[in-house]
Length: 365
Ligand code: SAM
Ligand code: SF4
Image 1: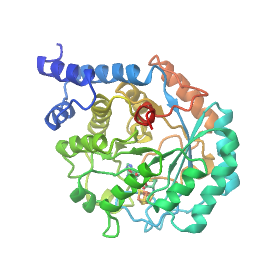
Image 2: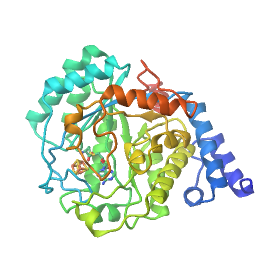
Image 3: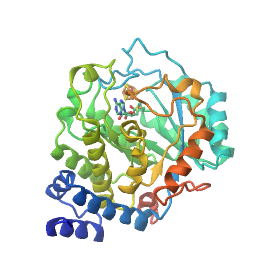
Image 4: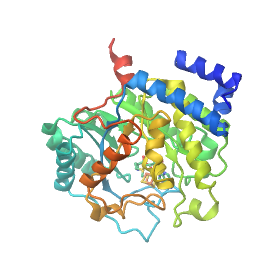
């Protein structure tokens, strides 16, 4: 069986020009379920990934810098109220060592991620690390949550070039259902605007398969990415954590369905946005061993293997079944090389892999 005429027409239109999908087109693509239709969707998105970002997969070493968090998001395993978590914060030397290891493995970019810590001492701590790793000449992405514009600007001046802050959902009512009252969707939006003003390559994303989330919500998420004109997308399936209010309250959609929806979101985001960087999130791998490779074949072009010392990894557990808990960074790299070779892809060693969209939108500045 081949893809229907309607599907072929939508895919053809999307492939010709960015931002060509209507909300109804997106919801139609996100609802596809037959293997033939999904194959046609993924093939079109993968062809666009190769056309806009080239063959090969950009790689960032991921440092999970600490699991201390001031926030209490209802879905997250390291939320401040989870008393069963053994808290840690990497020392500056440990983060610098992880950055050096990433460099020695041939990764030209790094992501530093942690729970949310505000205040001047923490801002200075990160600034100091950024200055210490500057000689390594890595592209540095931060994912350190909501901060003041001044702090974002200081970190940018100290060498960070990209920032990932997921909006989690573009639907403020759904956001309110999965966060406590002291979290504000509007503040998160304002942070994304502040990041853009301070000159970062800005990334955002959502969780996919949240209880109560509809296909129209997900279509609106992709529209939101376009309207915010973001450079990078980091999104992945929601995975319940048993020690969280949301994990206890609501049964999640079956793993295979959530994975399939996560892959379709990648494909539709690629078809709508064309030249942004899209990561194949680790959460895909938590749902299926080959989840990340399937993410690449659905149109993602970035992978973020963990370079954190394995002794800390089990403590940075956002959701159940976190993969690669005991693997060293070198083992992760070997595994990824083999997995990507099996789908005719490869890691782009020695290349920073900046967002083509960022370069395009700033070339006339
Ligand atoms: N604290 C920072 C923040 O929230 O922006 C950065 C680290 S936070 C752990 C990174 C992302 O983890 C969040 O944006 C959220 O989407 C994701 N996350 C947390 N709990 C999750 C879960 N149960 N399933 C899937 N993703 C989850
Ligand atoms: Fe903290 Fe981020 Fe988890 Fe929310 S998602 S509890 S801000 S680490």
